[in-house]
Image (cartoon, rainbow, N blue to C red; front, side, top):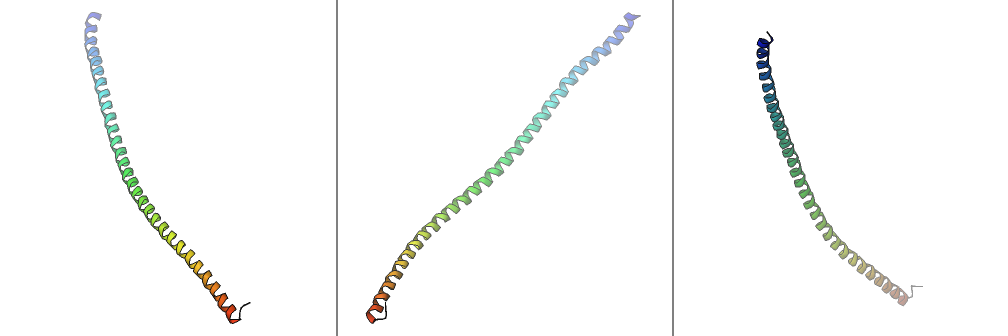
Length: 110
């Protein structure tokens, strides 16, 4: 009786074990495939973020270069105006001195 029951139980159990092992390998392969797909999607997402940041950084650097150029131009204008102001101050002092001399000649000064 046991000899008749063992083969009837052994065949389905062996089939189930073999099926379980193969299904496990298949599900592990599917899980690995899904993990790889997720990593590829993540890499593409982060790559697009990096590309966007690179573009923004490039635009910011271009804007900074324009600002630096404008700063240099304004500094040149400032130097010219400072020199012109110094010349005008000296001319004003000279005119004041001339006016004092003129008043002294006319007897209206000190």
